Amino acid sequence: MTDNPIKDTVIIGSGPAGYTAAIYAARANMNPEMYTGMQPGGQLTTTTEVENFPGYPEGIMGPEMMIEFQQQAERFGTKIHIDYITEVELAKNPGEIHKLKTGSGKEIQTRTVIISTGATAKYLGLEDEEKYLGSGVSACATCDGFFYKNSPVVVVGGGDTAAEEATYLSNICSKVYLLVRKDEMRASKVMQERVLNNPKIEVMFNHELIGMSGNMVVEKAHIINNLTNEKSELSVDGVFIAIGHKPNTEIFKGMLDMDETGYLITKGKTTKTNLPGVFAAGDVQDSIYRQAVTAAGTGCMAAMDAEKYVLEHFH
Image 1 (cartoon, rainbow, N blue to C red):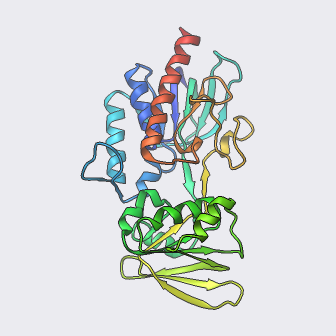
Image 2 (image 1 turned 180 degrees about the vertical axis):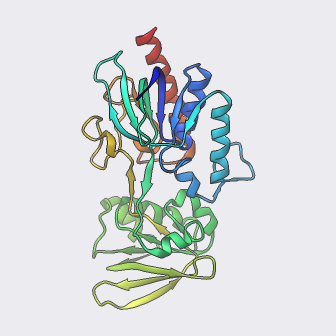
Image 3 (image 1 turned 90 degrees about the horizontal axis):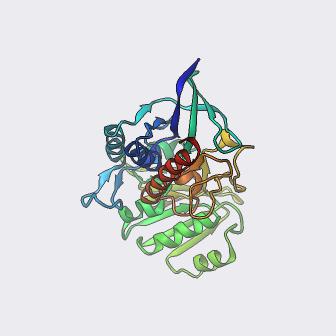
């Protein structure tokens, strides 16, 4: 079944980018429809307190903030569907219609598509990670580092992400243990030197995190030396998993240009992808900043890019 008429814009994914795109598109009379995906509100719904988004001087809980974003988008007429897109047939020429299919079997036709499916932090898969998520376990140092001021923490990972997070945390925390699985780091030489020359960072090669313990919050990180199988524990207040993020771009493979890790590539200072009428906003196209405020900014840009495209090709 096809749900006509043809939409001006469909936003795939929620979160700060998707909701901001919805607010701008709705105010431009584009009657946007949003398909939230499996995690309505995106990564921020797994964050406890957000203190670095302008306009919230007292800070706000991540899930609460996303409800406010949603309410603002709905106030201007955005239709929000708690559903996800399973298939896309993206047009290759300007002025052609894009076709989408939802998890509930609905077929949608739209003049423009705004992709804000975000990225998912990679975790190790330990039970304790879920148990202490938001109570000592984090995948974002710039989001949560402040809560561990003058406290010891562990960072897990050996790449650039881990090196950057460890360096950032060394300015806030009393001590940073960096657990590297192998006998060397994968991070760039510059980042490695920065870490190895930092007196507050202790790099522990050939060590892995095997668990955490504590009363309600993390108090100890349980680790193992993978050469000797010797187990030990570190007294820390926070554990930062820094093994990278995976952009949620599976369904666009083979259609849209991506980098080697799967992030969508946008043209210059726009949100345009390689296909006409298809725009990308937020963490799905940003592996560098990954902040709510930058995601919101690109959401605004995507809606404006989409509005201009519709005016040029359909009016």
